[in-house]
Figure 1 (tube, rainbow, N blue to C red):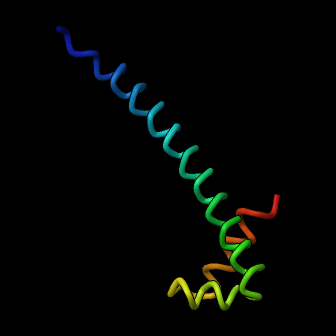
Figure 2: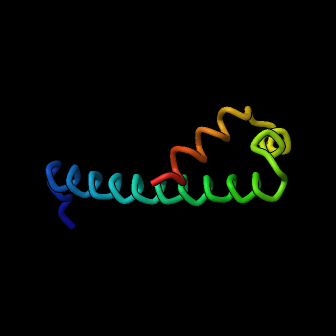
Amino acid sequence: METPSWRDRIRTEDALLEQLDDQAEQARKRRAQALKDGADELGSVYAVAKQLHLSWTAVAKAIKKYTTE
């Protein structure tokens, strides 16, 4: 069996990286929505951050960046 050319391998890997980027973006959006739902349930972004041992600014930025479109 012949090994594909380096150009073909690069194209294949670039396509895979693009798919992974798309999947990661979708995961960030779902995570941000879950953080927002948590803030609604617990009453504040701070409460969510405290429960997850994250900074409240990280939680607030994720919610703002990925749920506001």
